[in-house]
Amino acid sequence: MPSARSKTVPFFLGRIDDPIEDFLQEYEELADSYRLTSRQKVETVIRYIAQSQRDIWKSLEGFITHDWNDLCCDLRIEYVDPTLQG
Image 1 (cartoon, rainbow, N blue to C red):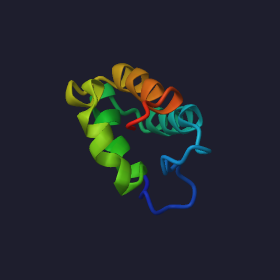
Image 2 (image 1 turned 180 degrees about the vertical axis):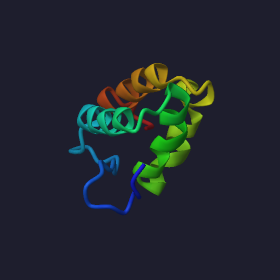
Image 3 (image 1 turned 90 degrees about the vertical axis):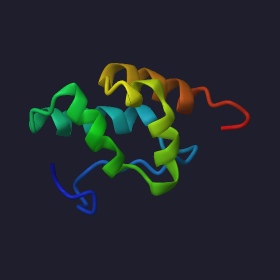
């Protein structure tokens, strides 16, 4: 996978105007082009998100179980319908 510092890779900052769906689609296309497994996608994705978001992502069930599809569902809930505390 390319460096997270590369200008050609997706990067998620976690801002309200930064759609999670766009990031997930772009990241999955990149990961698929490198033939990453579900587990590898989960392990690698945190390289492409802001440092401030990493603890949130690591606490999600899909991340803990290394299941890419579950992580995507968790993220859609977290960022599309965020809680008042989030």
